[in-house]
Length: 387
Ligand SMILES: *Cc1c(COP(=O)(O)O)cnc(C)c1O
Image 1 (cartoon, rainbow, N blue to C red):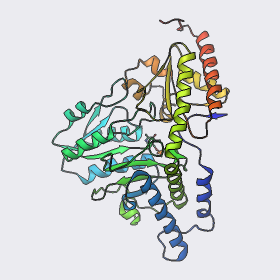
Image 2: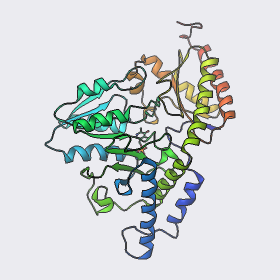
Image 3: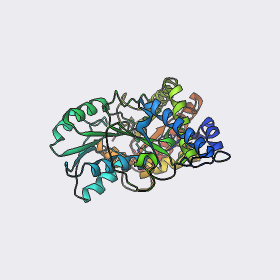
Image 4: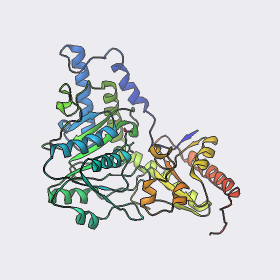
């Protein structure tokens, strides 16, 4: 069995699980209580806050715990614009955001906000000229993801952040796919708000964080007790938070080593697939992409059949993002980079992790080739040598 869908979720690291267990058992306290059991929970939570902050170059007091990437994105966007009510109603985003940002923006459009969806080139990257041209007097927020969850492309966040700062516009980035995989530093990147999710970096599901730069004020989405300094009330998920912290610590310790290892697997995969399967192509930017992402397209192949056949052979991969894999429309990301609908349907995302091995890659190249050729032999559309 080869799990190769780390952009959908990643297995919890055994050390992360180990760190979490006491907080389900003997150390089950509520972090808001004053006696020692509560203090223990609070101490564990503050340690985790430091671990998260350290991975992204932030101060602990700039990290707020949430229930995951989706909540962090919603809180960043809605919290900012609510706070800036009256200052403007224009938001800039990209055409390839994760649904947690895309759907939030669409919702805001229905509620009186104007949203510019910046196009991307064939390489999946936004153009700074387009961004410059789209800023207006009434622009209050730019939200552009760091690394894409489908094609892995990495946006010029530092430049975008510099422009936002120059224009006095707040800048949020969804860094759910990049944190723990490539260096992320909120100072270098000029970001004001940044979203993290634990389960994408070998932590547990249902917990995440939002970085909010000191001095940036946002409104909460929920109202309740004063947890997380009122920004995110609700009794804290201590085991989850401890797991997120541990996952961040491990990611920081092994960042460069893992990056290099996983990128070598990815390059082995890309070389093997493109070299052995005719009419196969790589979607997205050739180099400005996550070390663990390869997104292929095979002409005359139907992605869903490919995924199911690969599953029979013990390979877990996906077509578009997990969230769109039960929809019939082609991925909005693949359409945004200019693919035809049939090609978008014939795409395969493989996202690797530190537990994959060179042997897994070799055998998966053989399996992918076999499955693609078998599906093509049954397809009336297939035309060897090109069509
Ligand atoms: C997975 C993902 C999210 C959502 O995070 P959850 O913790 O699953 O809610 C948001 N943005 C990106 C880019 C993602 O890959």
